[in-house]
Image (cartoon, rainbow, N blue to C red; front, side, top):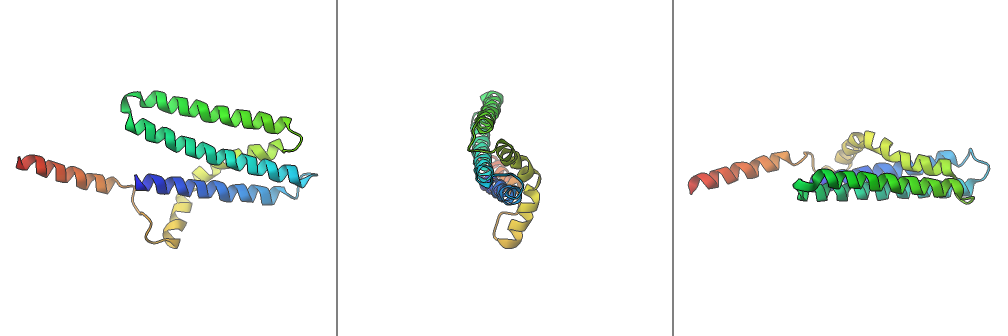
Length: 152
């Protein structure tokens, strides 16, 4: 579970970094800078909300294996709906740049692809960070439980 939380934090760090990069690069291109910055912020915040929603869906699905497929489908539809509503509002609003919002939401995809790189950087910066996915710990627990069951 700790590895899952670490992976989520690393994904969110990637979203924030790419969101900032989107805002910094894009500030020079549009005619009005403030709507672009607001759109970039809106898109990045939406991407962060979507990562949180994804993590909650995964946790619920793991906790309730019988309904896991339905839980994951509902979560995906919810995230798609959130993104669609935010994009419609952004493109209709005169105060927010819709393109910047779209790019801000899309940085979630970029952050996902660069998550292994962010993990490697995190391990160099923080050597005490988890280096495994936790599967070794689960094997140890299973081995201990089989030994305990054999003693009875």
